[in-house]
Length: 428
Image (tube, rainbow, N blue to C red; front, side):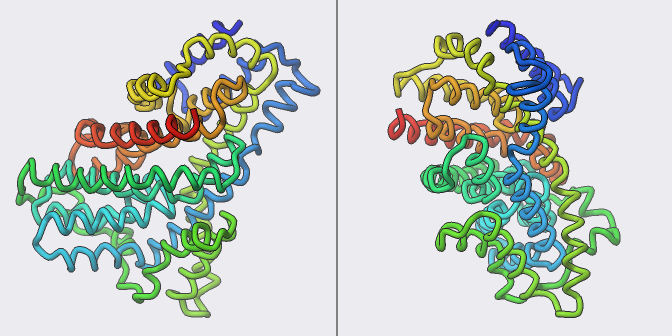
């Protein structure tokens, strides 16, 4: 039966890759089929209806709330002009020195990446940052990749990501935070190396051919580019991180602290109510796709943790899982491309189910699975041509997502290798 379950998973991957089914729908369908194959009854204890669907759907509720609050804070950064001001100040400081401008935009992207991820983060840093980099001669592919590599630098400190790994892998926040702090230097070094190497290797290209820049800005575009925010408001992206990392405040209160700080430092009292509601509703729109995905992931995790699924999959997964630390690093480094194109090791897809199997069957400790999945997440968030932030950044810069993948993959592959080395040396 374990072989049949693996074949069903492979069919699910094929459905997602071919876009026959949206990822969230495919994961729910997979969960139901796996539960039936594992011998789960229709209703009752350990059943499809009551355990997999009813209990699985809200299993990642804390992550969903964190995603919503991060999206809300992201909308505030956009509407109040905090993100735009950060980018403009960096560009002004860099002047006509391409590498300095790119490094500055990289730093702002990292700050934004600690608040929110995916396309909203890319837009907050890229709407001004990408045209500015191209204007001073940074090649288009390098400009798009700089935004993505910067966001990846911030991801180890993105609080909703901490909450996701904590809930999905049943680990304390302190454990997740500890590994993310170790992963951060690899992401930072790779991002800086990307800017320095790619900008110099390809030389300066004095072009200005962005369609979105040549065209006259629309009313919506002008709303995205408000005036400068006060200098003290520019600290907003660091507030949740300081609360969570420095003062050990819980994730959701830390994000709420960031929302409150952004509002108080940029908004007049009589306008607060309208801005709060407007940005909150906007945050719901941004958060809807990832929340839907996390509902599906929770359902899949509930299915693969059923006793019947564990008994069926344990001997097969154990037979192909390396136990030696060196083999662990080599094998899972070679498998890095499987997290691209919504592949089976993408943690925001079937990879979450595989992680659940590895933990439930006792093949690896949960903290080792954390190291593997968090390392792969650094690759997916930058180089996957199907991820929303990669698509947006590439298209806005006037290049294809596959061009960005080719340029960034070697650097984020090295980040994954570093994360896997840390995992193997400390937890295997």
